[in-house]
Structure formats: C-alpha cells, structure tokens
Image (tube, rainbow, N blue to C red):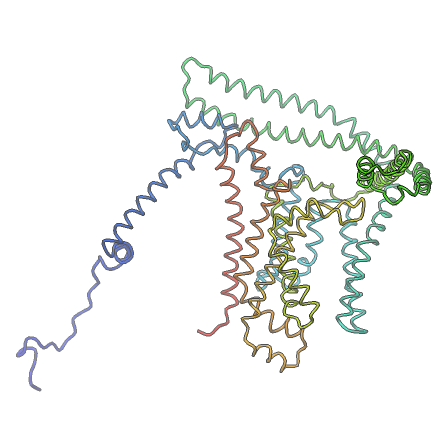
Length: 617
C-alpha cells in the first residue's frame, strides 16, 4: 500500500480540507437563543410565556412612567393632563408633579432653605473624607488627616454654632492623645488608654461646657451694644420687605389662577390648550414657590431677631435677679417640712397627691403647697440661667446659624443617622468580637450578654427606648438630643450584628496564622492589627457590607418615633389636599434614592473583594 495515492484510491486523502465557517444558526445571537431559550419544546414554551408576561408588565409600566405631568401643581391637574391625552383609569399615568413640588422637602426636610449649602457641603466633604479610606491608592496619604477631622466638622456644618465649639472638641481630643502618649511612655499602653478616656470624659463632661460658657459671656458682653443696634435695624427693615414680597406673591398667584381659569371656562375648551398653559405657567409657579420660601425665611428671621432683641435688652435685669432668685430657692428648700422634703420632682408631687387621696396620708395641705413653691422657685432659677446662657451664646456667636434637630428630615436625616452609625459600629463590632473570644471571663461575659441581648430585641424597641425612656436615666434638666439618641441605639444595634460577622471571619482563619504571629514574637494587639484582623475583615467583607446596607435601610424606622425621614414626610405630603391620593410616585422616588446608595455600597464591596483577592488560582 506504500504506492497508493489519491489518484488510485478515491477514499484516501493526503491533504486537509480548508476550514469552513460554522452554520449561522449555531453562533451569534441566533446560536445563543437556540442554546439558552429555545433548546427544547419546554424551554420554548417557558420563553414565550415569559416574553408575554414581560410585554404585559412593560405595556402598563412604561406608559404610566412616561407621563407629561411634571408641571402639574395638584393631583387634579395631573388627571386633567392625562384626560387631554385620552388616558383614563387607575394606570393612566404617574403624577410626577408631586416630585417636582416636594423633592427638596424629601431631601432636606424642614431644614432652612437659605442654608441648604451646609448639608450639601457636608455630603461632598464626606466623599473627600472617605477617599483615603476607600481608595487609598488613588489619593494622597496626608488626606487621612482630613478624614480624622471630618467627624468634628460634620456636626458643626449640620447643627451650626460658634466656631470655637469644634475647636474646643479638637482641643479635648488633643489633650486625650497627649495624655495617652505621656502615660503610655511611663507605664503601659493599656494604662495610657484608660488615662486618655478619663481625660476625655473630664473634658467633655465638665471642662468644655464651662469654657464655652465663659467664652460666650466674654464675647457677648463685648458685642452686646453692636448686636442690639444691628438687631434694631433688622427689625425695622424686615416688615417692609415682607409686605412687598407678599404683594408680589399675591399678584403672581392671581395671574396664574386667572390664566388657568380662563382656559377651563372657554366655550369650546381644548384639552391640549390647557396642558400647554400648565407648561407656560410653570416658571411663574416656580417663582411663587421661591418667593414663598423666602417669605417664610424672612418671617422666621424677623421673629428670631425680635426675640433676641428683647432678651438682649432684658439681659442686665435677668443677671441682676439671679442672686435673689437663688437665695429665695435656697430658703424655700431649707424650710421644707420633713413630710415632703424627700420628694422634689413634679412626678413626685403627682404621686404624693395621689397617695394622699387614695391612702389618706396625714400630710397637711400647706406642706404640699410649700413643696410646690420650692419646685417653682427651682424651675424659675433654671429657666433664668438658661435664658442668660442662650442670650450670651447668640450675642457672641461667630460662626454658623444654629439649626434645631426638629428641623432635620428627609433623606438628609437618613444619611446623617446611617453614616454615623455605620462609621462607629464597625470598630465597636471589632472590639465586641475580640471580647467575645477573650479568655477573661468578665470581658467575655459582658460582650456575650450585650450581643445576645441586642440581637434578641427588635430595633424599633430600642428606638422607642431612645425616644421615651432614655431621659429617665439622665440627670434632671438634661436635654439629650433625639437624633443623638437614635444614633446611639442604631449604632449599638448594628455593632452587635457586626461583631458576629467579624467573629465568623476570625473563626475562618486557620490556627497557623495565630501560630505564625506567635513565632514572630508579636504581642496580642500587634498580631491582631498586623496579621489576624486584616485577613478576618477581608473574609467578612460581604457580611459587613450587608450589615451596612441593612442599617441604612432601617433608618426609615425613625418615622415611628416622630422623626420625619423620607417615609414620614411622604405621609405628611399625602395629607395635603393637593396630593391626597398619591402613593406610587412618592414611594418610587424614595426607593430610587435608597437603591442608589445601597447599590453603590454593594458595588464597592465587590471592587474591594477583587482588590484584596490574594488566593492562588
């Protein structure tokens, strides 16, 4: 067969056929469809049914979503616009006018509109502060100093106040750090940490308030006459501006109303003409909205100026009356009969009077009257002292306008609570996870008890405790900010779950890592900082981010205790007669905002996992 060739044996080939392209039905989009969606009769039926369902859903959602109702000022106007387009029924179209009208309120709540730049600046600076932590390879290392400064800067931007308030906070932290370095150099780091905590507590509980009041009094006395003159000018000028602005609002509103009424009352009304008019008057309506916001701000400014002017004029008299009030209170307190001297609160008087009625206690009515007089004198002293301190603080203020916590709301409130709770819960969770694995029985017991108790209680219960019961455990007269109370409870709740997530990462490390740290001669904290904890946190990234996302979404629960987060504001908006009946538009906008932030956290966690991937493949 050695002489056999293709010419003599037809079925033997000594050359290769050229490659040919695969059939068109096996590659590209057609091939993918045949392989994945139409590979058999069952898959074909399921695919066709799914496509029909998707078409049905989109045929309802897309026309409803793309609705030209952005300039509508009420639900009725939305319906008129949709009716002009021949679209009737429950799913005729979305009323996006409510978002155009209230999106600012959904973002900022009742925060003063003239200082919206402050929460916006706080959000932008948050990104700058997080950059050295989240993207350390792309930003200068020295930017980490701004990250350390941001926790002091953010509250000052949001709540306002004098410029020396954050400076005093920074000074307290500096003293604590200096104390740590000094004590640790002469003893041990543990004693240095204890000393730093003690210094910080003394500074923030006693030193900061006294120094702040002293600065306010000194600067307030120097600026008193100049501030009174400035306030008098403000009080004299604002009423004319308010009257002028009110006339402009009335004139512009009347013009818009007449224009729309004429279109509705035409003999042969054209629905499209009415729709075009709504779009034409939209700029005028936006101008009216801006003027009304300015009117409200000026009216509040006038009220605040009148109040502060009266307080400044009465300041000398209030200070002069304080010694007499204190002496009167001291005499009344010392002269209290023994029958009532052990009760000195309003609740105590209520309980005492109830027991007198129900149990017939032998306490003369004049003793109860003496107790009430003593309590009234105590309250008068406290209110006078508070009025003097607040007046001096306002006269001396060189910084940002203070904003009360009750004006916080909307997405800004959710971000404030979520960011602070997330930032604090992670290090606190690390400490709890290490404490749960500690060999010290007391430390382990405290950490286990805390974690199991917090995980066994719903967050809403902790929020109710924060809003109603926490002040009971504080000294009388203490005004503990409600947002701060919510942040504390949300942080404690998240830290318990964070501790278990991190403990799972610690348990996943092989014992060889601990043995390797011991072989290098590292002590416990060096081993945790350099070897153990970086690996445990890398393993725990998905669980940590899930806890962050869950905590951020749980901030909507604050609406249950009266704080106006986006969901709480949506209920208030729907109570307005113009928007009564709006549901999906508001909830859809709120859901979109939360999705953007939560999806961003999720994508960053995936990026971080890829960045820290060190496994062998």
